[in-house]
Image (cartoon, rainbow, N blue to C red; front, side):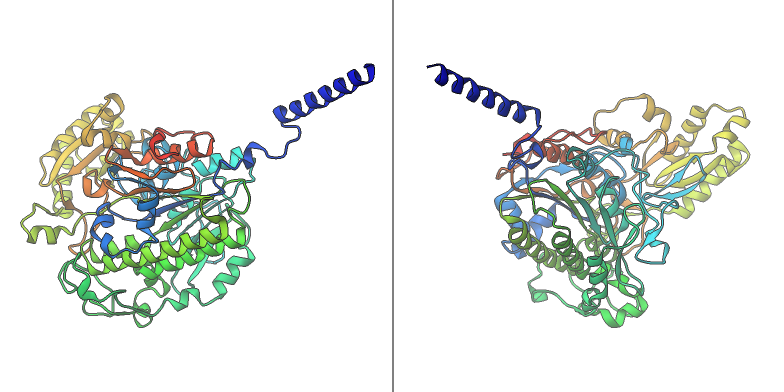
Length: 555
């Protein structure tokens, strides 16, 4: 009996030690980092300048494996919007991945006037780093101006750096800002006469072997070929006529009509850069993303990796040809095929049901105002020259000099505050006077001052969007809002930047592991994306996140 009792005691002690090891994490088969509940890979896809209605307008031309696979197997947030102004590429990518707005993350434009150093700065520009992969200055980039973390950063922190994060885009800012501060790498395409993927010393001292091999291949060169419509152009009934006066086109070709001989046209259009303004720029991005997945072993273990891919060619095509063009329609038809290729590759390499994807945009775009005007829709173009001359006359008459204004950019007016003080003027009074003056100008709809933005809480309308985009340290003294569908741009092609629906309403699709199947018309906003992915992964939200997790999309 005593022997039996001794054996029982020993077994109980062993059981207790095993339980202690499990709870303290001293030794266990599977850590929380490796739980099967987490996707092996999160793929964030941003389609540059994608309006929501492209999903519905071009939907009948899409196959089953790209956009429609995400819709049919995943969750479609149909009323998804940006909740700030300005709707530009830099702020858009930063907001998607940080879960907040320019008010917090600090990326208030692609370029903006720096009030401290008194000059324009670029959202990803960094003189403290060096180019990697080129001798051109195109690699002197980093995320140092973004003031908060991304969900990729938080995943890196959570996994003790074991989970990888890589950003890929034709545009430097489209790769760098989503990847965040702690990323293993960000790569962007340097065109001109090089046609290669590059990076910066923020991430590495030299390009990995697989990137060098990709650059040495004929991938980029192979896309310098004829661009014609994927399907018969007569079936493209969801877009305008091919020959019209609302498109830009390429240098060296008289008419902006199909087909385009890209190899021939590249000579007059910055060499390999011409690919950026064609759907082949997206195909090249997909090729490189798949090469990264393979070479970096993304999604090959239970520790979650993050791949941020931005398809930028859609933006270049939209700016050049306009949102109603045959070129835009063909670009989305071909992007749908590239998404199908990417998803099939993920199925094979990572495994069906083992990865999670979201797809959204960094902003929408306006119909070409000259086209809208031809249909009797109120629209047009801001006369910046006339406005500037009138404003300078006002400044001279009121303050004795136009030097009281340091800079006008991004629909913001920056005052020389030292000059204001030297004249014995109160800053808020000068702001108010300029605001009232600007409000009297043609095609100016609303004007607000920095003092108002910093002291008044807005909970709706364009005012709330302006406030969400207002960064007290970086934004200007006076903010302008132009009339609906009036832009400062050429009379061909489309642009963006406003807080109106054509710029704010963009897709939001979730698909893959941990995602429910469904749809909603409930309003969602861009800053909700990062907290949703963070909740799915069980990690901390980005440190400045103001969005909320969309619990109804998580299974």
